[in-house]
Length: 56
Image (cartoon, rainbow, N blue to C red):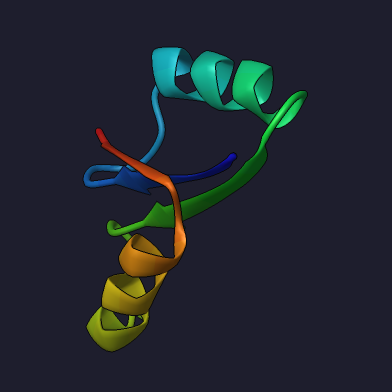
């Protein structure tokens, strides 16, 4: 399964743990929106590419 995590305010201890666990069995990608160089067109493409999207 392809899982996308979108971090609105950066990572937290909980998000790090969940991402680490899911990464062992799934294809996981993380987008950190707290960084200034985020392409919103690329985010939309990633949302439709992945099977599951989790927003933190």
